[in-house]
Image (tube, rainbow, N blue to C red; front, side, top):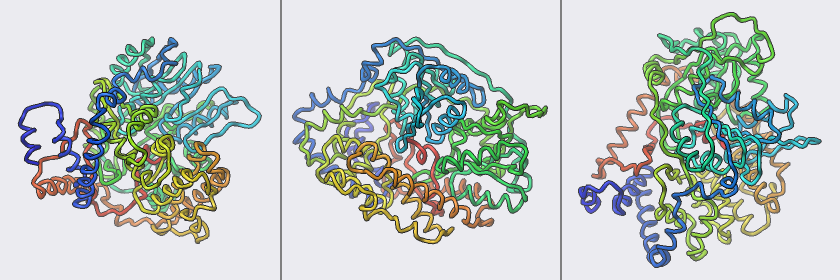
Amino acid sequence: MNACKLEDRSGQKTFGPLRHIKATLQKAYLGSGVTGLKDEIKYLMNAEELTAKYSTPVLEQQQKIADLRYPAEWYPQARSSQRTIHLHVGPTNSGKTYHALKRLQASKSGFYAGPLRLLAQEVYHRFQASGIPCSLVTGDDVKIPEGQNPTIVSNTVEMVNLGQQFEVGVIDEIQMLADPKRGWAWTRAVLGARASELHLCGETRVVPLIRELAALTGDKLEIHRYERLNSLKVMDQSIRGDLRKLQKGDCIVVFSRVGIHALKADIEKVTGRRAAIVYGSLPAEIRTQQASLFNDPDNDYDFLVASDAIGMGLNLSIKRIIFETLVKRVPGGLVRLSVPEIKQIAGRAGRYRSAAQQNKDTGDDEPNVGWVTSLEEVDLPYIQQALDIEPPPITAAGIFPPDPVFQKFAAYFPRDVPFEYIIKRLLEVSRVHPLFFMCDPRSQLENAEVIDSVTGLPIEDQITFMASPMYTRDNSSRNVASAFAECVAEHTGGRLLDIPDLNLEVLENAVSGSKEYLHELEGLHRSVILYSWLSYRFGGVFTDRTLAGHVKKMVEERMVRALTEFSANKKLRKDASLRRQIALQKQIAEHQRLLNAANIDSIEEEGDGEPVPLDVSTEDDALERTAPDAERL
């Protein structure tokens, strides 16, 4: 650490190797304490030996492979055609995505790419209901209607087919190309999609970056600006935790599935009225039914309790948004919602017209004002401040090395070199243009730890598993992922019922609202999604895709029933947001205390700007997660 401080005082603006080691050790210590620090030191010592033996002697050749400064050149087919990019920008509820989808609807061939399975499914169902043949492609689900030859496909953004020519492509929530984890998927779609017309929909702050990307690719750019179709106002007061103050058309935004069901039960008990629920992993049929019930003004479903997935553009007739809290849990800790997140969710209030109302005269002459408030008073100043602030322009797009780069780079190392090391070493020697940034590799590195526990996987299969939706934060999920990888390595044993690590026995248990039962169901649900995802990549090994779909549906039905039975503790709900704000401040203080105790400075961020969450809160709820992480692919 003293050597690092000497390097710090040298005044250089770029990170040297010692400061890189310092930041790595700090993050390991903050994430896992002394154990994490020991593991990281052990890894660094082993990595030093591998680098000296296999990387340093051929460093110049490896740096050429790891030169990622020109990602537009990764997609020669897209560069060989003249594209027109239509950039639709404006605030939420301004009609930008609506206009792009109308153009897609009129096209001879095209695709929609959204950030969530939830949105891909909504567009798929919307087109099908309109009599337009459409297929659905997400990471773990493919639907091609029988007897039809659909020329339009609705995808999650990671699944955009870069090998097919389209007339029109629509990429939603384009500002997410700056997302530190998934931004690479939007950048890949923008640079690589083979569409004569590419329609990008998102926030105004993305305009400068898209101008530069269009200049880089040589595409024609047309910018379409939209204004909000109604006004958005923050109320003077919160509802002060009093559910009796809820009004018809209110949507309460909650950041966990358990919280959604608990609050729904509480609302219905207090008000005597019904509350619909919407969140990403709710089965599609139930979700569509719940949204329709809320949008219909002629029934007693007066309220909606939803996850922050509604901020991504779901078509709901919401009059007022009420934030349960502005502090949400992410893996490892608590964070406050960012200004763009608050603006995007709040902007769903006062939707101009829901899907159910598009062909119907509602006869409602009331001014269509969107209102925003909070469940507790402590959050209201943050909401007001966020809506008054304009976030700074987005200046860089996320990238991640494409598969061919990994394959060429791995060829310099023996097959027994850990895949985790290959990922880290590739990123260490890579070069990136200032217009781009390297996405956070934590998810890929966590997957690599599982991959390295299995012998016999060729590099192509390791790369596939690196991109898979593994869950590695508990032993049972890691064991299932390892079992799946062993099936691929051995080219056998991939039948669903032949994998003993799958906890299928939980389906035989009586439905319960206990947290342990919910955890078991959620673990099985994640495992079955991973199985389905792998079945589309290793179809000769994982042959029970249909059975996996049935199991997934059974698990989801039990999850809905179990969550419905989950008993809400009113005492815990009271002042919940205030307690989270306090927990967040304690987390920050504990973060600094650990640094001081270790006699090291504040953690270096290496330019990514993302703090390392430290879980010091008293809540033990693994069912809490943010929508983009839980519902992507």
